[in-house]
Amino acid sequence: MKKEKKKVYIYTRVSTTLQIDGYSLEAQKAKMKAYSDFNDYEVVGEYEDAGKSGKSIEGRVAFTQMMDDIKSGKDGVSFVLVYKLSRFARNAADVLSSLQIMQDFGVNLVCVEDGIDSSKDAGKLMISILSAVSEIERENIRIQSMEGRLQKAREGKWNGGFAPYGYQLVDGELKINEDEAFAIRVIFDKYVNTTMGANSIARYLDNQGIKKIPRQNGKNPLFSASLITRIIKNPVYNGKIAYGRRRTEKKHGTRNEYQLVEQDDYLVADGIHKAIISDEIWEAAQIKITSQAKKYEYLHKPRGTTTHLLSGLIKCPICGVGLLGNKSVKYKKDGTKYKDFFYYGCKHRKKVRGHKCTFNKQIRKEILDGAVVEVITKLVSNPKFARLMQEKINMKVDTRNIDNEIENYENELRKSNLLKSKILEDLDKLDVEDKYYSRIKEDFENRLYKAYDKIEVIERSLIDSKAKRRNIEAEKLTGDNIYKILIYFDKLYELMNDEERRKLMEVLIEEIEIYQEKQPNGQWLKSITFKLPIIEEDTLIGLDNGHHVETVALLTKLNK
Image (spheres, rainbow, N blue to C red):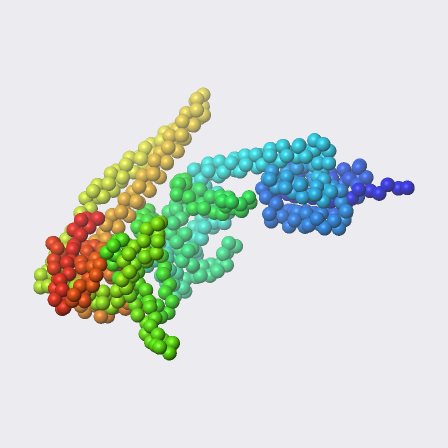
């Protein structure tokens, strides 16, 4: 009786960089079919992943299908044949987990070139060892590849991939594409020379009919705000090559999931390509984007929500936390809604970490809001107030320290650039016939890299210092605007909506103190502490009900 042949699957894989030296799909298939013929195996299925990396089994459609077929037992196979273990997978965990699943269904792995059969006693041990070696080799290849790209970046060369918008690749080098560069210049011009941000510039370009020219890596004709931000931050437009701005990192808690993460520390070198944006415009853009780096939280309020003017600003007289706005609904005896009441209350009435606040008063919103507005109105109606505010507007801001810091960085940068130029000049003068030429050249290159590193640190420090100066000046302008608003507070307040009034209070007031108990005249308000130096000394403001409220100016905030 003729013996039944063992059935096998053949699995082949190549990455885009390994289609040579016997690793091609056809070469792998030929080896495995010859092995099958020699061992009298019957090939009942062929699975092929072309252009797929071995770092993970995810994304390999044919591999996944093969594993599903093994689990279903549809062909009754005994083996999966692969050319080498590295063709099966380069990740040790993937190799062992996939092999375990196969063996659970009675299927073993044969690596033809490696001479490994997992059905043999030592086979699985060898697979475990070689898969770990394969993973190490993959990591070494990645590191060597990164080093090569890093060196290329140091030489100012483009590292591959699509050219950034505004440029085109000609023989591997970046060349300005004037059709696209026009939009890049407009973006930087509007960002630096106007108050426009990325969103405003995106709308401006769309309104002006300035569209993004479709290309392989982007078909959308509109400039999005996120793209504009990336353009403004990209040193390539200033004639630089940046390497390592984003790094692929494994997601925490996953095996094979990766994400791009922005890096604070990366290489920036002078590129061999021409800049679209001048040094002056580039630096101004970086100063602006650094000074505006604070992230603002967008609060979406549902329609009909009441704005509590002083929520968080009023301090609980017992525990000191900010009182929050609340709503209470009153009903008639028949159960129908009568009216909404809004009030301020302390949220620490419930136990927090074992402590409980005993302040259980609910103070009507209109009472406290009205008292605070009355205090400010009385304050600004003082005959001396307008003159005092005008003096503060005309006051010069002291930037001498930061100006000295900027000057020192500029001097350091000038010296470092001179040193870099001198090293380059000496490097060009080296005699290639000198027997120590290679060593001397290496010494010069090491000095040059250190010079570039130092220049990069100084440039970043200079941008940070100029951003600080811009912030100081911006704070002065903000203060001036608040003083101007205060001069005309009684007129402007009536014109503001609830959100604008709330923001004004946040900028203007540090904190509001209230009494533990309502006063005989019905007043809760005890004192207001202002953020800005509005008055030179503590002042008592008389209210219409005969009550006095103390207003306190925090003079220490003048030079913050």
